[in-house]
Length: 168
Image 1: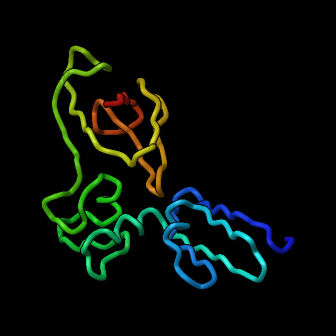
Image 2: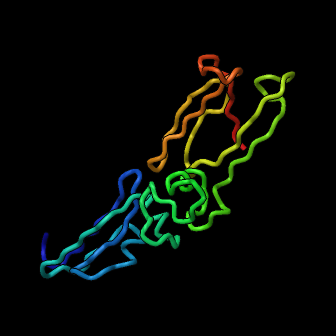
Image 3: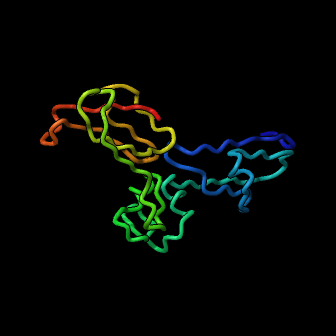
C-alpha cells in the first residue's frame, strides 16, 4: 500500500465462535474486538494485526465461577447436568438450583384437542429456528448444540410421530 494511506481490517468470527482478542502492533485492542474492525491511518511503516477466537460455549462458561470444570462435560455445581446441558437449556453451571428453564404440563394440544398429553417446554439458544407446525423439521443446531424434537403416543417407539412445535 502507498505510504500515508489508510487500511481497514474487518474481523469476523465463523459461526459458533466469537472474537476473543485483537492485538494491534502486539497490544490488546478492546475497541477492535468490540467493533470487529480496525483502521490503520496514515500508514508510513510496518504494522501487525492478529485476532484470536473462542467458541460461544467457551465465552459463555467464562462468565461463571466453575473453577477448573470449564469443559462441556464438567459439572461444577454438582446438580447432575453437565455444562453443555446447562448451556443448551439456559441454566447456570455454578448454581445447582438453576438447571435451566424446563417446564412440563399435562393438557390437550393443537395436535389432539380431546386427549391430554404431556408437553415439555424448553428454551433453546437465541437464533435457533424450528418451523412452527405439526411434524415439521425435527432437528436444529445453534452454537454447537443440536436440538432434536421427537414424540410418541405410546412411548414404546418413536415411529408414531406425535408432536408439534409452537413458538412462544
